[in-house]
Image (cartoon, rainbow, N blue to C red; front, side, top):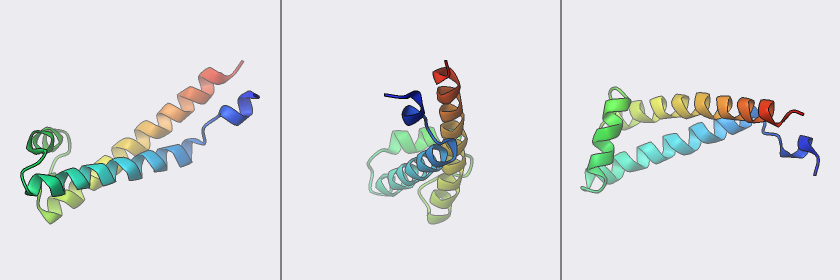
Length: 86
């Protein structure tokens, strides 16, 4: 297998990470409304300022989470590709 086929596209990987994590954070906020995942919701509200189980809080948390994972995913893919070089 060539090393070219095992590379990540940093933009696509970062976007995928951002969308997935933002969706997960929003879903966790929705489940916290019915009493599930309250500890996780409190933890994430410490990390993402403004995040809570209200509609506005969910949107704020999802935006924070999107950019957090976008940057993290992009950096991961760039580092992975860099380390993959011969």
